[in-house]
Amino acid sequence: MFNRRQFLALSALTPFALSAHSHRKESAFQFDLQENQFLLHKRPFQIRSGEMHPARIPKIYWRHRIQMAKAMGMNTIAIYVMWNYHEEQEGQFDFSSDNRDLAHFIKLCQQEQLYVIFRPGPYICGEWDLGGIPAYLLADPNIVLRANSSKAPRYMQAAGRYIQTLAKMIKPLMLDQGGPILMIQIENEFGSYSNDVEYLEELRQLWLRQGIDGPFYTEDGYEQLMQNKTVIQGGAIGLSGGESADIIKTRKDYPHVPVMCGELYPGWLTHWGDPILQGKDVDVSKTISEMMAAGQSFNIYVIHGGTNFGFWAGANSEKGEYQPDITSYDYAAPINEQGQPTAAFHRYRDIIGAALGTALPPIPAPIKTLKQHSNKPLLPKFFTSIWDHLPTPRAFNQVQAMEQLGQNSGLVLYQTSLTTADTTQAQLQIAELHDYATLHFDQHYLGAISRTRIKAGAFADLQMHAHRQALRLNQMKPGQLSILVEGMGRINYGRVPVDRKGILSPVQIKTESAEPRTLEHWHITSLHLDQTYLARLHATKNQGRRGNFFHLEFQLDSHLNEIGDCYIDLEHWTKGIVWVNGHNLGRYWKLGPQTRLYCPANFLQPGSNRVLIFDHHHIHPKPIAFKTHLED
Image 1 (tube, rainbow, N blue to C red):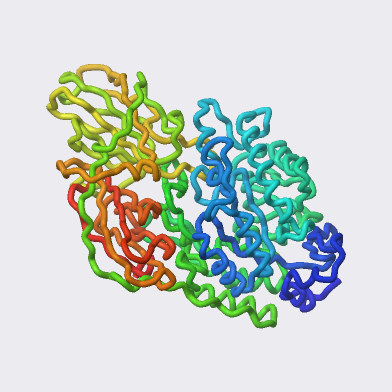
Image 2 (cartoon, rainbow, N blue to C red):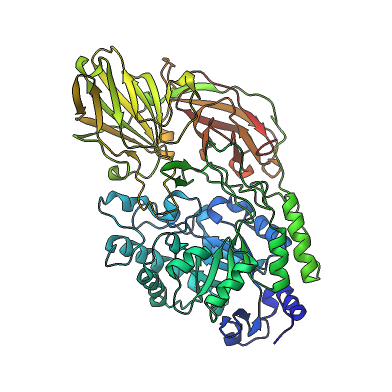
């Protein structure tokens, strides 16, 4: 047995130095079932892990973020793998392009002499769209998710294909093969969803059949673990939000299973409509101090959050209220969205360094920020209207969900004809609209409907019907009704297993004198807002409609290595999406609290640059500005 000082001294050593003269069998990461601890080369080992997600970080910054975690005293990096990010279309996997190159990220960790905890799901939560499960599965009206193959054959078939593909890539990166991967997590926080332990075992068997025998572990909150007993054979336990005392309690309940804090929260997530960016008041100094003193293993979730670029942000559901997540995943993490150390970073670094009794690696130099155009208001110009760039619609008798159209994200336009009888003192009702829509009559704006709760009186100038599914129609002539729907983040946590997008219920016309009538004969247009669609846009005249694109052309005179990160401030805009040189920065919404979108330096270029903005509501452009921080 080692005393605490010897234990921490071993944990402070450069990890791969320990294996330099060891036989391969002695290099394995193992569980000590008697002492209830982790072993590396048969010696007690404290995991000090910081979580970050390659999908949320520009590839050029991967090494920098890894080095930042190492400088805070981490010896391990934990990563979620977002299945839907790597298989957007069924059977088409991408593990090589840009920041989808997981093998490269893992090798960078090894080069920086850090181990890896691998968290591939298939479900990962993570405030990510549908918790990482591909949207194409939702095209099946009878789909069952996160269950064993007897209950969910379609899902498990797809999950099996995913694990088989993933296993080929990571098998050479496992510790016993000379790589840095210590453990693989099976599913994620399943005790918050179900008690189907047969499903967990089936996932474990999928890995075993690929020649990967772990070690494995599960992740759950303490109460959910005690209630549903969602552990696996031979696996360790990670506790979500676990304190030092929770680890001790769990070890009493599972005396021969190693336990760690699998998610130690240094901040928190933020939804659109929250009053402030959440998590700033969190301080886990006491917890880190206790775990260091006890030699307990932990994973800081997240040590660096990054950004939900594109349409990947997820959502929660609280008491029936839909709560989409903002674009930034800053999370009030010790390493902020730009990769800079916060005050918390320095506090935790001091605690860990003092406990280890050794000097930690130096903090890497900060990433440059953009100086040109900083804080100067710039006015984009009208470019074109979405109404001038509608692909060919498809005809349906009834409305269809986005996924039934073979679409994962973006906008869907629903159009049908109304008669005079429909529009005289009538109310348009949509019981299930996911998630935000502007309504138009002959392309003239009528109002907006939001699934997200909006305070009464907010956006009164937009005729917003906050958190309602009805809109009154008054004395209108016959014409075309258009409903432009934006699908926002799919719910990623809790017991809501399926969250399709678009219009999910009949659209009805209700008058005081008659029963509601369902509208039929729809023309439905998919607007993916992807690179193919954007490349076809061309300038048109502004005809006073809503649903417009605006653009700003600007010059950067410096060389690429002098161009820096920035935030684009959209304080004066209402709701939409921003692209910089074709890169989708994500969503903005005046609902707040986020009003600035992160633009990393690699999205910019010397010479001419272009910002493209789609806004649901503005007819005329508003100013934007380049800022150096998420908020002042």
